Image (cartoon, rainbow, N blue to C red; front, side, top):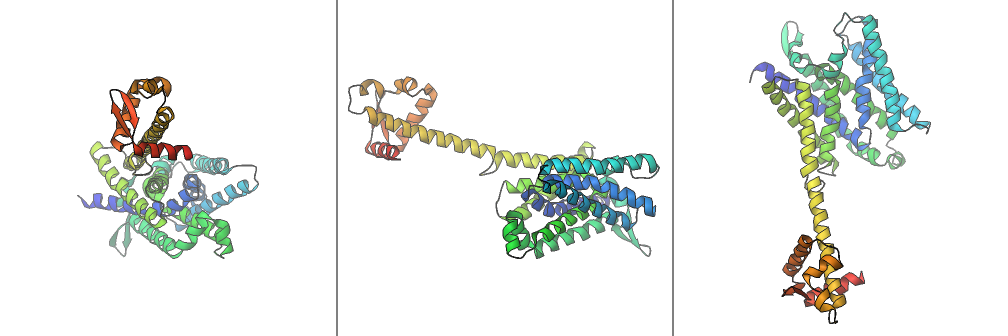
Length: 369
């Protein structure tokens, strides 16, 4: 591995973890789309700040972009508080308006500078190592690594110091207010942190990957755990895994690095969504099949008890009669009988079914419920 590749991976990992931490709280608060809104609307702040200072490397661009992110959150909440517009609709109204104004200003007044919309949306992580941070002629590494390292440290400190307050405010803002935790201040602090993270990350990786890292790893982690501390750790690990695997896939396919990383994050989510131990689709399908079979066995023993010791038992309690009486398919009826025999609640003799003592107890309990 070359030094450039190592620096690209280092920046990608910092972006992934830095985005996953505040992103977890956005997903928990059902505000995942806010990351998309902020990562796009900050373009307007960058453009306006550039028109003022005429320097793409000025820190005023970062400050203006952060303020625009907070402005986006404020405008969305003002619309929601009118109780006439839902949260998702308010986001859909605010960020396209701010983003489109930024695009218009670029196309009309800044087409000659490196501030194009492709760079904003997709970024180019491969170029990040070439923008160096130098002090008195000494090369200290990629500037993006220093920026994202600082933002990652800020996010870790914020989540660690206010872990209890953020947890309570995310699940029950009213109780948090009653406890004196100032949920509104925490909310805007978190949104400011999301804005700072988006501003710092999108120069290197683009807004699309920022949104992917803020939403997909936390959503994947929430399929595996309900404990917040474990979700934060899993989200960071999924983000790191997406960054590393995505980079090498892009390297071998000679494709977009950001696109490959976002695709890997989506692939990880799909795998967990399918095969998560308790909440995956496969586990749910198995659980439903087991419940259906258990219910069918209860129906069978009740049916046998109802006709036991009666003249019609010779006909009603035969396997082939279950297809007509209970409307089961032949294969399902045979499977139910096989499992019932294995459980010791039914015995079979010459195609006729008989309840065991355990079967009578189960049938009686089922009817009592």
